[in-house]
Length: 207
Figure (cartoon, rainbow, N blue to C red):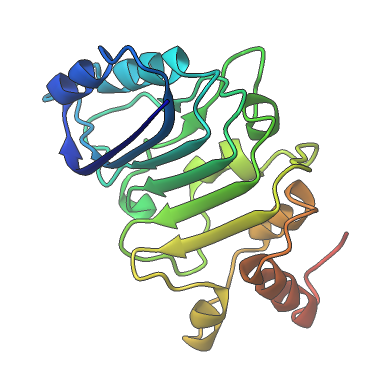
């Protein structure tokens, strides 16, 4: 199986070339996927088809979306049966309200679409200051969603600042992030621990 890393930005043509690979992918890392309704109108469907082609073998996926300009469809993800690690960089959420994630109709959420997921890292482009963004609704708003397989979950920004850094700078973390503790009950890493301590300290945690 193949481990493929693309360190630069990728457009529609390059993604189409990758789709021609015959060997199954185990690890796919794309630093920047260029999304634009003008320049690359079909790049997200192409990415969906590529991931679907390797749905049985892909274990590690890293993908970055630093811009989502003039593109009004969401990031649709196929079911990836053996995915264990997913690192996702999303665009600056304050100014990109059209970005959101969706899953196949039969597997409508993170837990069902990625049944073996153990590590999920969500990276906010530029900065995360604890604010909520509408695109996160599809990931964290469902109170019935539980991902028991995940052992490591964290949110960071491009500067790799985490919960304690945000709190130390005086920012407040939106209460809706408390759902993370319910969704990933078996995650035991530093970010999750700090998030729990923050909400407990502020009397905002109800489990």
